[in-house]
Each structure stands twice: as structure tokens, then as C-alpha cells.
Amino acid sequence: MDLSTVDKIIDFAITQEEKAAEFYTDLANRMDRAHMKQAFLDYAEEERGHKAKLLVVKAGNTSLLSEQRVQDLKVGDYLKEAKPSSGLNYQEALILAMKAEKAAFRLYQDLASATDDAGLKAVLLGLAQEEAKHKLRFEVEYDEDILREN
Image 1 (cartoon, helix red, strand yellow):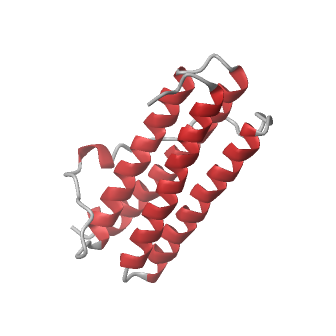
Image 2 (tube, helix red, strand yellow):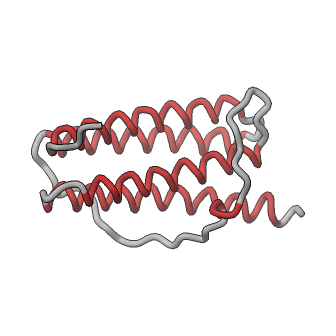
């Protein structure tokens, strides 16, 4: 993976956002709980929004996002990996989503550390925090619907 230029970093991030949107659309199509189906569709739309922001950044505007820190409950950090399958249940979908958001958060932090461009670094760190917000939402959902049921 060649991340030697700002454009290559942005292009890589755009590709990752496209994959994330597809991931959440797929999870939504597997859900039988209407509110989680809608939540996953909403996250797919947010990922498409991240892609749109990155396209604006690529065009030269790096003043789009803030770096406000988001709390990490670390719920997903201690859960057994779930595998995407045709019989995916609600709990497994939440675990997959938490792990995916954690990976996206780390990706944006790593991409930010790979550039000396201050504007791009700020955008990437802002996107990292948006991914952290997504992870937090799934952790809260898991806590409320899975852990409290057991």
C-alpha cells in the first residue's frame, strides 16, 4: 500500500469508506430488528458522508472536521470475534460492527501519522473520532440489549 502522497492517503481512505458503507448495508439486510436495520442503514449513509467529506478534502478544503474526543467503553475489545455469515444474529452483528469501527478508528489514526500535512492530519483525526462515535453507539446498544438481558 503506497501512502506516499496526500492524494494516495485520501484515495485509500475513500476506498475504506466505500467498503464500510457496503458492510453496513449488508448488515442491515441481515437484521430482523427494525431499529437495528435502520441503524445499520444510517451508518452506511454516514460512511458515504465520510467519503463525500474526503472528496471535498481532496479538492483542497481541509477545514471540515473537529478532533473532539469520544469516550470508549471498550465493550467490543473483550468480545469473541464474530464471523459474517448468512445466519448472523443480532449479537454477532453488533460485535462485527464494534470491531469494524475500532479498526476504522485505528486506520485513521495511522493515516494521520503517515502525513506531515497539518490540514489532512486534522481531517483524518476528526474522521477517527467519528468512527469512535460509531463504536460507542454499538457498545451502548450491546450493553443495553445483550449484557442486560443476560
